[in-house]
Length: 177
Image 1: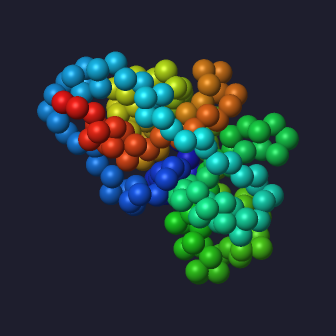
Image 2 (image 1 turned 45 degrees about the vertical axis):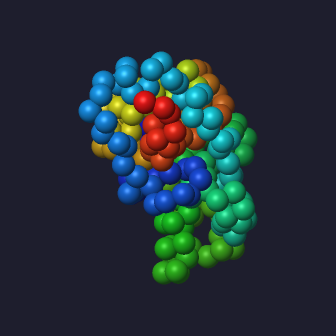
């Protein structure tokens, strides 16, 4: 999915700044690197969603409690994915006074652009080779490298979780050669 605003970042656990996460270049082919593994093998935690009308302070508290750097924003009526809330960006907006902690989330969220923008559907069955290609900006990765992917069901009706570059890099570090 393409988004408005700055490049997308990690929606997942915040182990390090997502913009600094690098996928290791092992020089091996993807088949050697991942050996048939899929997104499900990354064991992604469930996505944490908020609504546009929720208070910024509530969203911040929920993100801090789970050590998430980004939250998905879903419609109150249909639960459709509308965009995401970047906690680092939101903290900056709070510091400069653009947003207050008593404002609704929609004042600080980044909305997905849906019309005319192809995007890659990432499911639990997506091979990790395709996920890496997506993170590098290929295969409908949009306008360039991506730092996270929202995992949905095949029909894109439910947000199942979130995977990041850090998750993929950690999977490669843990996996025996």
